[in-house]
Image (cartoon, rainbow, N blue to C red):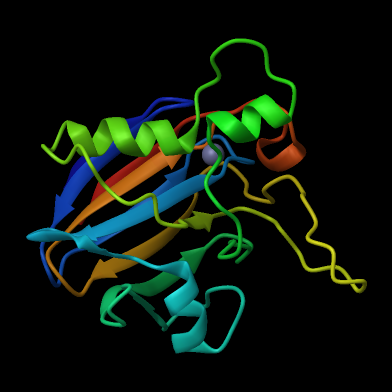
Length: 195
Ligand SMILES: [Zn+2]
């Protein structure tokens, strides 16, 4: 088993073969992990939250379901959930423009830049920025239709397990969001275990 430590505010890419499983672990609790996946031999095909919502007929993911690409092929299966079961499939990754609008001064780390950097280290400079699946992220839909922003309800050691259905490059970023409550105000690390 290989463990990949993703320091707070950073992202990492790793390859998984079809059939291989991996765990996304929140080692300290209250931390969001933005997850992206690209087909290994054609990065113009990627995990698409909007296509997955159509495929599963739901706003939020649930164990046993497949997550689809923009070509509607299952790329990951949600195998197990050892967390409160709260994950987001509605919201774009945080980005420099998001932090500018939130009033950040100077450069602020973001999941979008973490994704670009991680993929460039795998030789992919010009990638689409898909809408991620935001593991452990709490964006409940309120009665009036508003999207809530709450702190991730995870405790230290909570995890989800995913299985690759295609050979893929997966990118996970330890979301650096510290200007909304998503990560409890103090972004922390994420660990990956390749099983
Ligand atoms: Zn983020």
